[in-house]
Image (cartoon, rainbow, N blue to C red; front, side):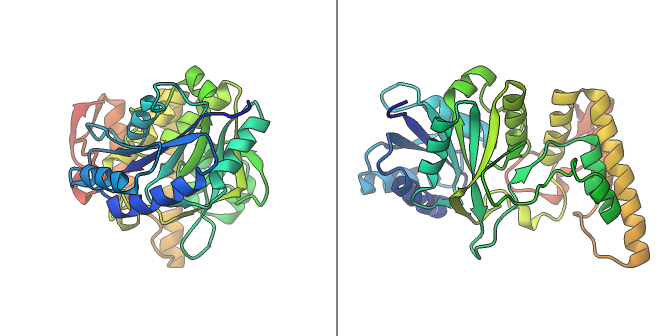
Length: 338
């Protein structure tokens, strides 16, 4: 592959100023590569599309476009708009790179991912080392969710975590290139040949678990997912979703979690995963009261999780309120069919 074609997709939702900064770093990191950048405004409704369109025109960057998604179908759907846009000449790229609007690649970050995929034909996905504004690394390497992993996460008890260490979803941050189950999608490159085989993001996921699902489909088709610490990207994190300000778990997170388990493992496994989480969560709460430990979950989390999944088991669910800005009133009685 002498000069592979690369398409970078930068997804924006109501963060136009930050997206400008991300675009600047992406353009710099694409320098010397046979690549283009498409900025997708995910139906922000706040003038972001016009702001970004005018900004790109003023920069007079070659091979940079701004497109409007037309509707906000979530993270995966927004990235799919950019992927389906393809290159400006109508051809398909060899590699697709996705970048969050609050993520800023270092000058060689994109090249490192591309070169790794070129050198490793069975590598379908490669992701960067993500670090915060303070330089501290973010946990972005994970094992696939499982019943045991749900219990380990919920119980928060050292002996259990040690016994189930191979099921614990978050991994220790690697200091060298290594294959992992799945990666966070803040800075991720994918082989188009792989996407042609397994498909792009499943748009049933509004937000969360879409990267997990994509990496699982890749693994089942024989492709490896690699973490490359040589590729470095600074990430502010949770700017569009408001995750750090959640005072209650949003409906779309619960929908995505349940759909992931049901789609990939079936209804019985999904029910066992929820029971494992609830059982571990109850034990954790008992220990928290006895030992006077601080809260570790959003308010009402365990009840919201159980109510949501019980409703789904009977073909009903709490009123859907999938919006990018989580609200505490997104939980409710059972209404719409699943």
